[in-house]
Length: 422
Image (tube, rainbow, N blue to C red; front, side, top):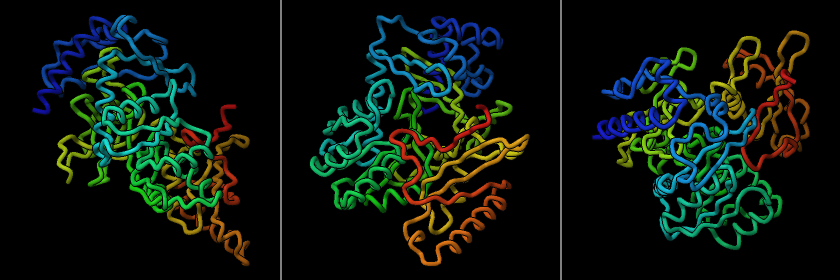
């Protein structure tokens, strides 16, 4: 049934974009395919990809499939790497999005009796309003806090007694850290669940958040081009991958170098096709996010396939002297070492013709107050060096820094400073 519904919706989307969006007509024609060629889901692989660059070239409204009079909302990506990507929503798109975000909250075990503290940024970023409408759809009480203003956030967490929090994982740690500094017991808050997304994060970071705040930390996935948050969500059962809402999104994994479709279970770049979006439908959009599809059934009983946590992007990959590395791989090495905090910064530079990598990582308070501090720190530096060499095949300069000395981020954590392009 699943596949049949997907195929029917896919055929409708292909017809619609071909006849209403000049970009898709040209793109399909150049690839020598027509909407009628979609006889099975497998035929999709003959269709061309849509990339972020295509969206930028169509800036601002070139890829919309409906007239502006039908568009009730505009959002835009942060545009950190050039022109921002603009997305539009019809009234029905907003309904669908609210419904999907409500599903996410239900998967997290929330009901209308919960109070949701929403610290995702409101405004052009899709996170804040996406979570907000979903919480309202669920019937929960929502606190539209937005990002920043950490002291006020902490006061509201204490006074209003929310039972759930939505924000980036790095901001959750930031909140916990500042709360502890102000003498708050983060574990005594009424919070029981956190819904964290908008940046890749590791299981070690999850443990840290769960232990510090005494909550269950769940992963949510989305991107503004596809809709915003609510494309997939972890449930409280398995916490092994996020359920992709396949009645609205068709997901493929591809080899990022060749574009070839990979079988489920193999790690590759995620490619999404929207099946129900009216204003801004996308066919085979390359997300650059690296993950894999899990087809094994989940204990919760949901039948949608799941996607693994995103381990990095096929474009934020750092290439150091020919070795490809994702920040999350370096994080995985760091988290295995006793005495380090989950805060780090990678600085890539070029000295002469050689690329250099400096890994700055915070050490715990306990180590800094250790009488034998210097010897212990040298030992940790050697261990990090050895592990990076053994596991990733890279040599880096290690700089251990004092607790709380690296910059904190209220939105997405910016892990890599690449000085090579400057």
